[in-house]
Image 1 (cartoon, helix red, strand yellow):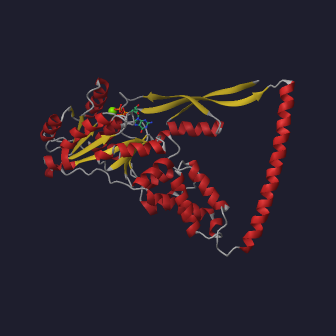
Image 2 (cartoon, helix red, strand yellow):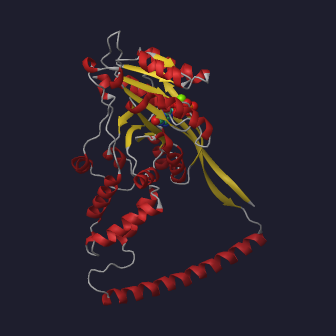
Image 3 (cartoon, helix red, strand yellow):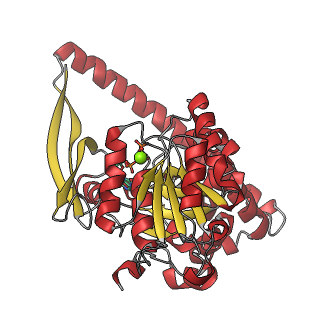
Amino acid sequence: MIEKDLQYFTIEAPTPREALEQMRRQYGQEARILTHKSVRRGGLLGLFSREAVEITGYIGKKVKTPTSAQAMEESRQRILADARREQSLQLILKEIESLKANIGKEDAGRPADKPAGLARIESILQLNDFTPTFTEEILARIRKDFSLEDLDNFAVLQNQVLDWIGEQIRIYPSIQIPDAQVRTEQSSKVFIVVGPTGVGKTTTIAKLAAVFGVGGSSSSSPKVRIVTIDNYRIAALRQIETYAEIMRIPVACVESVGEFKSFLAMADGTGLILVDTIGRSPRDLAKLAEMKAVLDAAGTRSEIHLAISATTKASDVEEILKTFEPFKYKAVILTKLDETLRIGNIISVLAASRKPISYIADGQSVPQDIEQASVVRLLMNLEGFHVNRERLEKRFGERAKISDAYWS
Ligand SMILES: Nc1nc2c(ncn2[C@@H]2O[C@H](COP(=O)(O)OP(=O)(O)OP(=O)(O)O)[C@@H](O)[C@H]2O)c(=O)[nH]1
Ligand SMILES: [Mg+2]
């Protein structure tokens, strides 16, 4: 008979990431999450509040209380397994002996099959969920550029690998709002966020509106306006209206091409028009086409960005990138970075499709949990590497927490 002896725990931390890290630290790899909820602390309607995260979970240990027949069978199996392991060990030892003998005969500088440094990098890349193709490309570069001797210096090796990963990450520049004096209808920036359901489009729009709306506006030409085409759902409309009201930013709703065109004409002189869209499943192609027809009304001055949650697995990211391709999005906004410890999957897929990242969102708090995308921020998120931040900043430039502007 096998029983599960479960130990339950509850952890509260400022962010999901810290909660996950604390769980790993305290309870190890075996720990499993049962529930996960956000607890808000202070603030008004989520604005300026600091959220905490509470997770509950368990660690399970299998406890065996066998009958005597089972006990005999089990010890028989254990002895057989030990014997097999012993045999495999003998085989491995033989293999090592023959490898040792062969290394001496190999040409100088030709790498053996998988030296320790290479294997270590491979397991770090796997730990971070880099795709097999991305991992293989990095390993091939190491084999090409590093001699066996160089591979012994792991510090040098990992710095080189971090540089190679960093070079694969493309960054899209942050929004530039034209000066008030030169703003016309045609010079307003129209920044549209599309993406699958629930990834954080509306929250991102609210964060950007707060950050870029700093400095206020004259009553005739607001610096920032929000427009939503997500007015089919009352709750969605209320959500953005609430944010807009608190931030004193005008918000409008449009449903058709005609309405969007009239809105744009009316919004003449606005610095930045942020467009929140309907959350759509990538499979809902008819609705996506309908939405695209409305967005096309903004013409060439509009810029579409695709929001993707960092928790999405590689194959789904590929599918989302493809489905939203007709929108000709300029860059990807990576949301919910705080909810995962592994981002190799996203880095791999974006590198393969050559798509840049514009912003990174890492929490529910408006407006603080957003920053301009930077190579350093993403590399700092990788697990298993000893990251020298200063070196990376010299190589790739510094992080830019755009919401700092809000508080200064
Ligand atoms: N942890 C975390 N949660 C986020 C982040 N961004 C948004 N959220 C949360 O994700 C949930 C959905 O956010 P929304 O902004 O409503 O997502 P959406 O894409 O507009 O959703 P739909 O309009 O329904 O498609 C909310 O609970 C947000 O607080 C983030 O960066 N990190
Ligand atoms: Mg929304």
